[in-house]
Length: 238
Ligand code: ATP
Image (cartoon, rainbow, N blue to C red; front, side):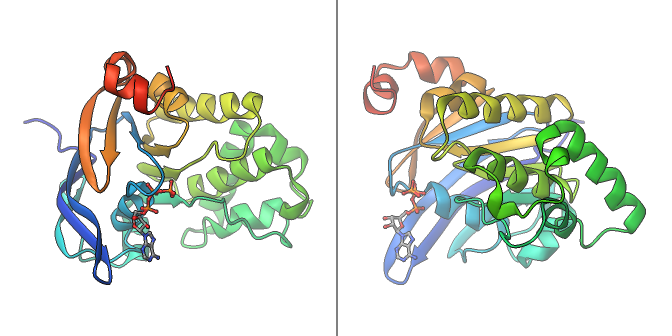
């Protein structure tokens, strides 16, 4: 039998009061894939990620995670199943140390397991180890992004949802963030990443979806979308 997709969203509708932001979105992420979701400002990318992680109510549709329907579960239950989100703008706890920020990401797990995860995160982001005793607020923007990703990894997710990880970062750091995403995938973490930086995201993605005003307009491999005239013109500035 075929393995169930890691994530399957079907006919999802979500609204803010009377304003419908998602008009029936469907997408799929297979285990081990990096999938990029690209689109203009206000297209509904953040709303979709938040609906998947359970912090945004939905009106209709289903969210299936590794074969299990989860759209009725509270957000913390989804985390426990293996779904972690890194919100836009990072939201690290600035007065707390880097190490304490990371430990918060493993609050549901035992001490021994958390310690193992911490070593794993330090291995992936050596700069966090160097700065483990410093306040998170003292880190640069790129380092805070690494910290937010590291914190999400502390729960040992199967699926990581990343909202605009390259936002506000210098080009060199953008490259680093995308390299980390590939490394996560190589280690078996499935990734759904939302990006304004469509070119960089599609370059590292196995597949991508283009969302326009609350609807999926196009999908395909990262390479096929980069080659697509409509994508080149509207999102890649080529
Ligand atoms: P951005 O890149 O700017 O974050 P996005 O693609 O993530 O854009 P969303 O933030 O999901 O888009 O917004 C989708 C639609 O929902 C937009 O029309 C937006 O104005 C609307 N919207 C988002 N948040 C709210 C809110 N809290 N209240 C009302 N409308 C909202």
